[in-house]
View 1 (cartoon, rainbow, N blue to C red):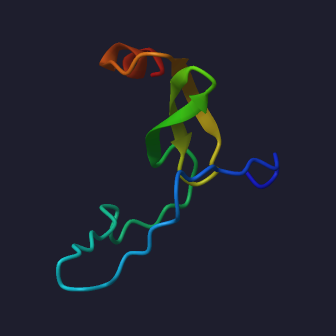
View 2 (cartoon, rainbow, N blue to C red; view 1 turned 120 degrees about the vertical axis):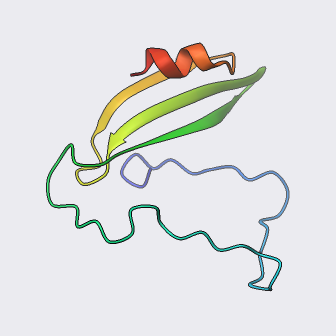
View 3 (cartoon, rainbow, N blue to C red; view 1 turned 60 degrees about the horizontal axis):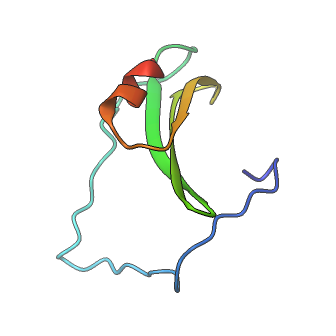
Length: 87
């Protein structure tokens, strides 16, 4: 995002979360894995992009080490078929 000068838009004020007992802290599921080569670990994310008339949804599959985008799919409906087409 920095390289492309993209800036997220946050509705309202930014939220600040405390570290009280009520907040659960999840550890990384990769734990002790030492990632040394490409295609060893992939990650995925689904996000939305606000448009003038609604939202579009983006799913991306990335290589964890190189951060190279392996696959992506954009749609205006949030159903599972678009996630599967991205693979």
